[in-house]
Length: 494
Image 1: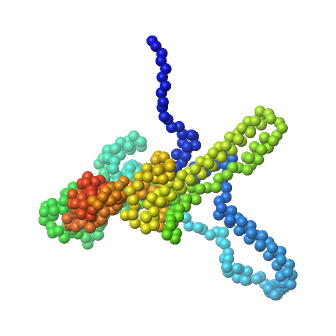
Image 2: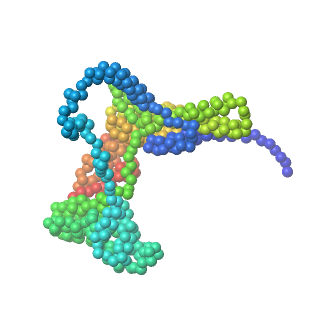
Image 3: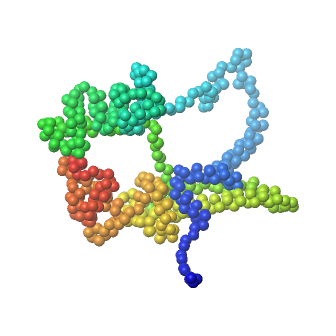
């Protein structure tokens, strides 16, 4: 056995703790950064929230106003009110002064008992339980009905098998039942509002709605129910010619029935459900057009005024200046210093985040300036993460983190930063264009097609070539799916 030594050269990248933390907080959107900062403020007493420049200006204005008000009161009270004869304003009568004479018309009296209305909403489940109370059910049937209602999803569908509901009732509530009994109660719930509620699939949902329509639409309703019951697959695949031949009906009659069906609500639960959250977009950046140029600002929530606690700094000075250096004092000094260092580190981190966000967004604006000036999507140039990384000298992963969860508000709408990134395509003239422009052209081609004879993917490819855009058939299919456009057969209209 022999021992040998050898030299090996290896490259590795080590990130500092602050760099790692910066990578994490870059991903945090504006809507969450305030919560993140508040958490740090709670955990570290050496960190404080300072006043913004606007708040400082407001305080200065208030102080100035208060000073002027005090001076005015000093000068005017003695001079103007010494000779005031109240007898001129008070009646000689011993009667009480009428209330209307004591009221100030500009400032009406505040009614302490005034009730401020608060908006309340019933949830999807609550609304159905209220309707459930209108049925005449015994205790067992009511519990079965509650189980059915509780098993519905937000769209208003009962997607669970009836046997599974029976099992749940047996195991959880010790109620013995069968599918037949559940089915009978289910039919009663299906009469609730909105129409179509508690259906087990789309076919049943649409039929339930049609059965609740007005009598004057009788013939069309009967035909629509027949089509949905017997030709649902053909209807969903838009095989209208087959339906027309099988039922021996005129195309105008079929068109009226189809228009009746497509106006029905495929998700009746949406009318009642308030359990689903509404997502509001809070922009991270604001871009304005000013005198032919583009100005950028950061959402104020991203740039809070943070500072070190003066109290903690004073405590540190006092401890250091003290003569007695016992163990307890040393531990106190160490604790205070750690908190101050942590606060200083966090302030630097937030500032670095602001600089990174602004630098990245400014680079995107410079690259896509034509779009920010005009709002024309066709002005968006091909741009990838590497382009912005090269302009900012940041790593590609940093640009990716900024672009993934941030939004910019412009005069033309609010856009995710990802919107401005796209690969390039070469036109028949050899010009580089953004894939986004290619998708726009394809969308226009489909929008202008004859809906009675829609274009196939091959025909769309040929039309794009005529307009100067090279596009493979698989690219057409890919972009059509991205744009959520169905195949030609499903786009066909009667």
